[in-house]
Image (cartoon, rainbow, N blue to C red; front, side, top):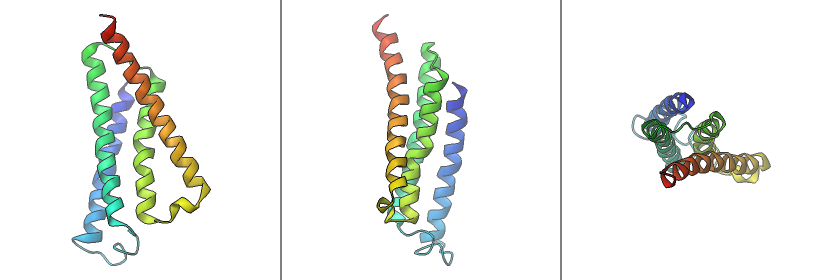
Length: 135
């Protein structure tokens, strides 16, 4: 289950990277970042927020499982961790390339990301439901 903590740490680094990138695009403008590198500032903020939420989900699932004495299988943890990076990744791609939906690989990436993330969270949620309904 510790993969959830490691993933959350990586997501926090991504949160900070998005925050600095946004700062250089909007507040302390660095030539070439705003309008050059960052095409859609609003979507960059969505990526930032999504990374925050995903890191909190990882911390929350880990903490809740530990406190309940539930062991989330490694594969479920990996699915959550992978989804925690790939779901906000959709926003990151869109911030740099707003017309990204025109490319098939992005559609496939997005669909797979949602499937992986959903599977991991449903698996963990089912273990919590099973644990608390069998007490």
